[in-house]
Image (cartoon, rainbow, N blue to C red):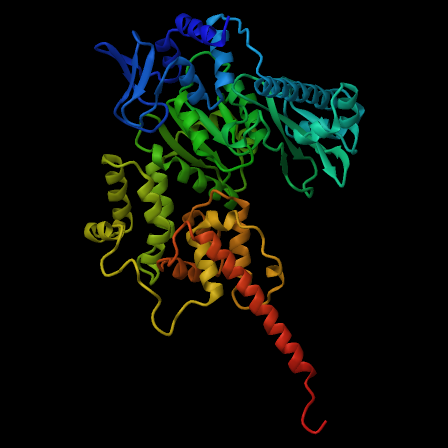
Length: 563
């Protein structure tokens, strides 16, 4: 049977309405078609249509369209080959492929990666549960009061100390060191390969099908760094697309009423152990748009639960930024900050699941959380109030979906800060009155090259994040350069930062007022030009510093009068 014939057989055997309804529970028949909320973009009025007779779908909002196979491909974020395999399995069609060398190579590598990860999981789990080298890890697990049931459910393991434990095991199983390096199980230094994970509690990461696609290793000793070490991205693993614990959560029958998002993998296991179900964690990164999109397809309410410390508040802020375009939709988005010095694991162990649920009932809706957080950061009684609004509040408020929801949030924000409605409208305008787009710094107060570099990095964090380090910048000792380096490093640490997020990282820094003043000025360069201009600025800073040092050296060796 040809590939085309197999595809047609899959389409004949699958009812697109049944498949789509698993992802779009709002799907209802209206006339000849079915309509529901589109899973590919955020909307409040159904514009997603499924035609049962033609077995096709079409969204009149975002324009996505296709058949049952392309729907699965897009909604699951997988390639066509994988979507074909999933739909064939569901339709009961055995795929008999014509030979395609490139496709066969990709399929074979995928299967080999998954097999390697499965074996590594078994190895790590054995080391934790039975091997003498896992004794310290077992004691650590006891201190966290994790039961054997949760260790088995989440396949938690231990990577022992030493550089060739897993390596020897995997080589005996027929794997090559170079491919294990590519897949992130081994590391390579100057041609020497060794175990990437050592002295760490190991958390296998499962995709939506239950395949082990990667790992995260947590330190046992507090001073070891980094706290979490993750697998690199591979043909089977994309960090921004996966959520730890989601596969396990989806094994419970029915659609969950709520999914709780936490920061740590141990938080997931601990809450589940105490009877708090449907808990997931992001993979050592900020909550991504893909995370939000997937979660809002699976449940009616998403609650972000973060630690009450500074890091937890920063994580909540980043999650809020990502969630803003989904505000006001059919899925409720809520935020919970735990008491200071508490995380979900410690809280539920100290106070029990009922106390956690009672606290969760007090979680703030997205709109309330946004208004409260912005009100703490923008103070119109201070001189720089407008500048901070332009830098922090305006970009966030503009990310809210147009319509009644944004208007309601704006009204609440204006009321909280006692901002007159007409002033708020003016501040939200693309070009505030009295300020031209081409405005330059005042005569005699032109920005220095260091100020210009900081200004560019603040307005275009992505340009700073992806800029290759400029040799010599770390050695420049001039006013403002240390702050410039810190801004660049912050941008590189989290490439998806917005201007508001970047400023938030400096919230408690003495330099924040200076940064606010800089960012309030209109950039003279656009986003396309920013990377090149920023690099030119940095190189010029280094060149000027070198010339200055050279001139100083000449002066210091110049003979004095009378010598």
